[in-house]
Image (cartoon, rainbow, N blue to C red):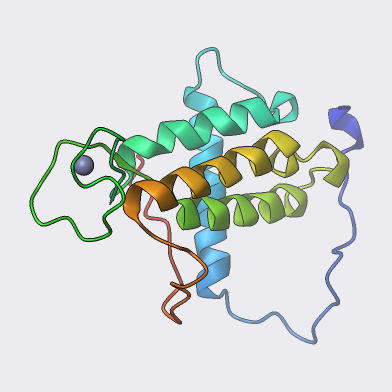
Length: 164
Ligand SMILES: [Zn+2]
């Protein structure tokens, strides 16, 4: 946890000949990273990246739920366990598990690309893996979805973080 040791580490990826144009993944990653930094700046009290723990990342994920577009039925809802509700209900919208999962993957990479040490990477915390597993399970139940069966090739779920 010593900020001064955050020097430029060599890129762990095999170096490619020339710099490729930023891919969709790369630009999404940059956007996510900026969103997270912005979140830290607006955090009360403001939070330095170096002091950021897995608990703060969990807070961030929960904060993102308000921008989610995936309806997750509560257990008392008539549509609980139905993937195709036939009428509107009052259940909250959340970030879909798949979106959170890929978001964490991008932020984990971005953290290390921006000088963070792998052993202090808050996005790699065990608590987050457990949280994601829990979200996956509960959303699968609530939405009547088995993720294994729904592996369409359009699984390029981009997170829409409409955060300003
Ligand atoms: Zn509902």
